[in-house]
Image 1 (tube, rainbow, N blue to C red):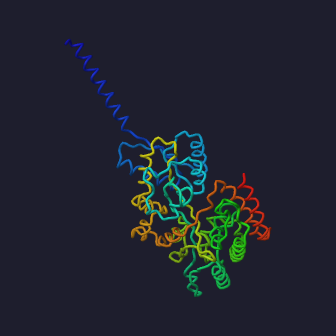
Image 2 (tube, helix red, strand yellow):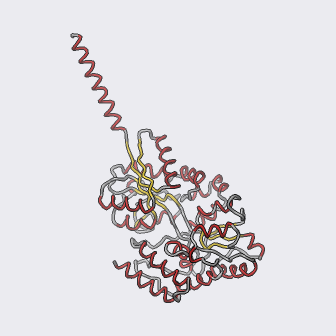
Image 3 (cartoon, helix red, strand yellow):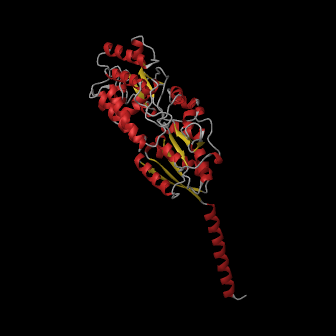
Length: 417
């Protein structure tokens, strides 16, 4: 062999070996594209993806951190077109009925299903039909509406935690009369999502429905009227201008000790109330499942789910990541680092988590009793209609029965489109 032939053979061998190595690397590299939320959700996804890569070095991630509206728009377009652009998506609970009913999400049954450690209502909304059908998502965030009261005030007046909305009304009147400069209660009265979200636990506790099990409008009922009437009576003991209140105003009223109760409080609102830098009522606020009435408690569920689009080419790997993201270990870490509400019963029972968040046992109880919003694709339109008429009743521009009747008719029209 001449020197030239030797050099050529060596060069070819080197190129061949490089090609083989490149091919092996390319074959072993796997990538998941995630469409998720921004803020704390984005931080959670970053923590989870980095931890997953540490266990699976061959996996890469591309994560989009989007606003709620931006996420809904992008994933809807991608799934409608069947582009397969995303392998994992975050899903707000109200979006789930449309996504699942249209076949846009992968059936998770053949991929291993969902762990029963997730508290039942969070699993129910991960199925279609709700509670009975196949699993199309895994619960990630266990947001739930709760009720808050200032125990120090209640103790001063010999009051116990209210078991019904009728008792809430009586307690609000007692405290408003006895405590100078203190409103008996506070709630979100802002038109749209805020006022509807605050009203739903009262409506459900009275047995009222916005939409029945068959998907028909059901708001115009004696149960709904009873709920609306007691809500309007409660409003008499709320701060002036409550019809414009949103989350910030509710948190401030509780934290400054100028409201004795809040008809609605969410997990992310609670920690600042125990922080001396932001609160004048540290250790005084108790959180509980919202009171019942004729039909028992009905805390509103506000879960976030994670799912796999049907057109993903990485379903097994995506399901492996979903299980890791929603595992007890990861939910514990996300709760302790970010305050993210778990969906797993075992995490709510974790001693370290309960030590960090004293209200978690009550939060778990609320989650066990949680009720989802109507399982309809038109929920956004329905919520807007109800929000308009609730505020009209709140500011006295419509009688309660008239507000319900007109809202019912407009909701029926929206459902027929």
